[in-house]
Image (tube, rainbow, N blue to C red):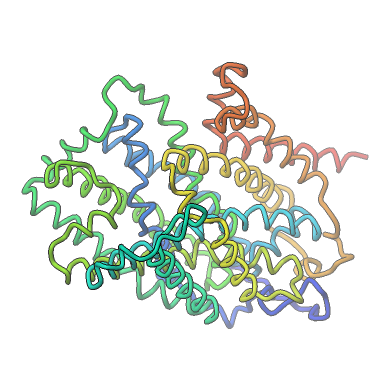
Length: 489
């Protein structure tokens, strides 16, 4: 890819589509190198959901190496659209909402960005609850009576101590948002090596307690349902779910790569930071959980619950601090930047990135994330696959439009003009987006029990297992075809 950086040469600051947060980042202000990009990915990937990512795969019947292979393949696949979509950020210095004006039209970009951003609001709430739970376990060490704090009723579903810890962690996130985007880079640079150290330390603890890594991995077979499960029946939905795990970031990666110095930095940084970290931390989750079967006589997938069993208050305290930092670093980079920008894109001249982040935080509270996490199976195989279908459709249009139709060339100033060449809604993009969802709609409706699965047949249920791939390629191909028709006299 060309090491070209295009800067804005016209004054568009009077446009309602312009804001300082959305303004293209000039080359002189690009401060992120490949290690900063890699650190962003380490900081995002080292988190409790990654640690527990293999759990559903293994519970469905995979063994440990099959689960890891599925995770690796999923992340290598999603790395491709990640790098492709990152290109526009580095070349033109623009975030996702501005990029979407090119693909879906200036007006249509508001909805397209919200489709990405609202998903992240749900993730933000979930991660904030996980971080608050780590703080709660930490406080129980020095204040056991906190567990007996007043219960707030069935509507809330928490005691006062749990709610306090959730809101405390929520405030930490809001403080980072207040500090701005550069503080995110600083957080990730500091957190990444520390988080890897915590994970490796947990793995070494399990290894030394059991005495043999082969014995630990043998114990992992206890976690699976049994040998009668057909691998390929769980591989494809599992692979789609793994792609869906970071399909969100594959769209809004320009939000970060707009600060990268060169295309080489963003490509190498992402290749270093994403697949390897995901596989390593997932392996740590598998190995440590397998060791708990030997050590405690039961499988403990939740690292918060596991660390609470340690006898040393110092070890528990350090571990819980590590988990809190891990969740904070993931939450800010993965789940705040995208919705903050998406919300700001509704009225760029009126709503700042910071205000968008605050609104994201409020949504993260009112969705009651602790109730969303009540069903881990639904979290992986319904939630991840369902929204991966939406994101695959968006990605198909974006990549086809930018690379095939426009050959990576665009008029930067026109992206900030209400009546410019990208005005209104790009109808062809929205047709391709909507039609691409139709093949997976029957499977989705059956999965969430709105219609009986027997009424649609195995083909449509199997097709839903490939949701991201189906919507991506259908949207890509249909958008290309519609744009070719546009050229006809």
